[in-house]
Length: 391
Image 1 (cartoon, rainbow, N blue to C red):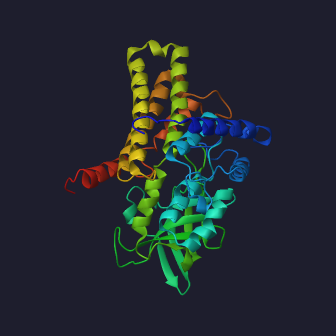
Image 2 (image 1 turned 45 degrees about the horizontal axis):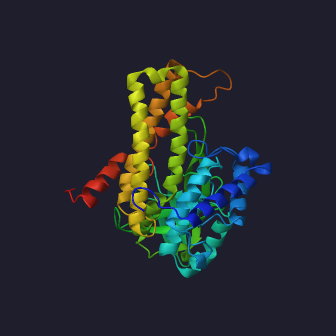
Image 3 (image 1 turned 90 degrees about the vertical axis):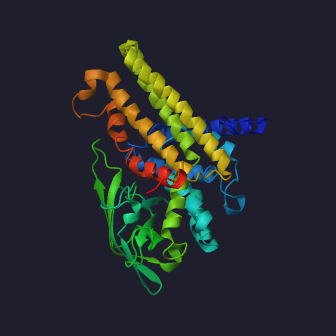
């Protein structure tokens, strides 16, 4: 693959298989799941989407790129991209199992022991076990190296004390992977460890965070003596930073192509709104819509080239370029959406004061350049680690 994808006849047959399966299954009990969930809408249809995860697992659509020997299909990068694109085009629901499949699973395949893989991968593949990510803290959000949540080893278990914030789906998750400080004498990147922690236990308090959109898909998670076995340490004690950075690289991998299909739908809606209202005739707005279309194409070509050159579909430091690129683009699209709507973007229709799609897009995308590593952090990584510039 270069800037596009070279598809074989077998790949096209696979695309047809994906489309047919989605069409057959996104009906009946899952008709109402279409279009639900995803960024800014994670509060929607939780039970139905949890059932959908189990349907995906039963159909063998989770862990496509995982090795066959570990329960996956060993699918090529091309076929993984095809699946994510068709999934998004079908309007299939936002994945509750995304964190387990796309983040924790690949991390265990890369850094976990055979025993950890045998214990945790089957639950992810079946769609029956949901995961959340315990990284950010009130004083260590975009600066992840500042983590202060502590884990103290007592014999065969760790006791965890501290607070995590902005934890997506913590209220529905069965397990979390948590970055903790196991050596309080060390600072910054040193002395951190990566633990797998059961969420349904005494010593864990989950509190929803109400967002500016009025919904609560994120949470604060308080650990007060919560425990996990030493066998749930991924990598060596004190090696958590390396494992955590591996997880972040997986987060910015092949699934971003499916994310871009969602972006394409949002841009199409903004363009249609501009055409309907006549705003498209405004030269300045017209130019911004054209720029957004160009930016979306550039993102796609960049992502495919980066993933192709990585060999295993896991980007390295280039992931920072991708995050900086799409986060800025998406935030700008939110601003464009409300500018196209004009004065009507400032009001709602009345009780119950539901936000319009343009309003929701604008408000939610304000966070895109902050979560998952802020734009400032991404620029620092690019400058220091890729370009070799001084600190």
